[in-house]
Length: 512
Image 1 (cartoon, one colour):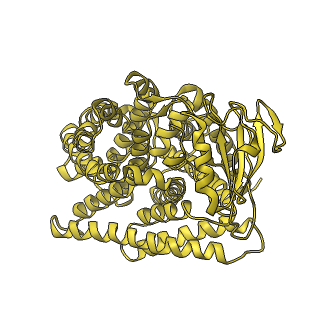
Image 2 (tube, one colour):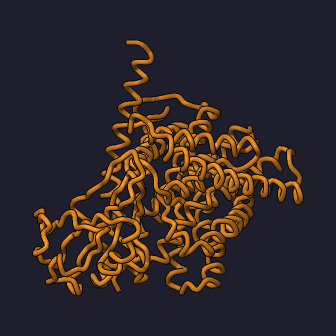
């Protein structure tokens, strides 16, 4: 058996184990990243497979690629409606909040670990950001739906704060290595990173939309590949001009995700799979770098750093911002608690090793320990805290079936799914009485496990899922008709890969 055959077998086994572990994550109520990291540690030098891995440069490279893929996918799935709703508090939390968290945690870490202040601030910068994927996966697995404003703030802040943490980490490393000077040097680096990343993301994101929609490829499977290639180019261009490639791909992802794209559904599924592969590979590789004995060695000090981060730094960063933007005390407490750490801190923890910072191994192991504590402690309690604070909303009904349009042309139509609530004004009405315009037609009704062929005489019942094919110019009228569906009625563009997709409805289409 050739070496490459053995590598393929081991990699396949690890990927299968990582994929299956996601099921245990739902049952245990902990983020899946914990299980991925544990899998890597169990496969390492002190584990079952005894794999010796200490190539920090390779780990850094894998982490960088994986993080870019994850951020690009996160941007694709960020609805512009949520962005408009909470962009002000979320953007302040993603910048000022990360800075406060980094400084408070860094000062404490320097004292606790007995290391220079700059290295303490480096550690604080590494753990300064929160992980959206971990938060949302925990809420979904626990069946918790938060109030829209709180959920949107957590989602946007968590998705947008990674570039700030990356900038602070790079800035601290350059200060430690003497490649930058405090004051003007750091300010220049900040504007270069953020400004360059934002500019490239906006410009090349729009160019990518045009290219994807106009190129008319022969094979549908090439569209997701083209989208991924555009993301790679955007990351590379931003980095080449001194900007943040991570910010660029996130911004470009938001533009692409909220635009009308050819084969959008397939593209979303492709990138969702790529993001999962990236997480599994990244966390397993990073888990291989650490070991149970190394974590036990820093356990006491790591617990103190985690306590400062969770109980002091995060609340100090969140409270002033949320109070200014009108959040009440209960909402502030929940946002403060949901400072869950995930992919970014573990990847950034390889930077001190890559650049050979004197206390690099210590910083890596402490960050690793802090991430595990945060994921287990906060991750397992998010749902309970949300319920205790009374911030849980009734779950939205999920459709048992979906419809989609597939075309390599820009089709002037959407498939929209409406849920008919118990107290809807439409209950008992017949389809011909709805007053739908010429630009809309009911394509299917799904009722209690049965497909109902739509006819003019078909009566609408509570709990029906009504799928409507509607032209863009008729969308507002149809939304108005079905907005009478009651307090739990929902409009959602379920799938339309040929032209566009939204994850949540506009405000005016919700029943009230």
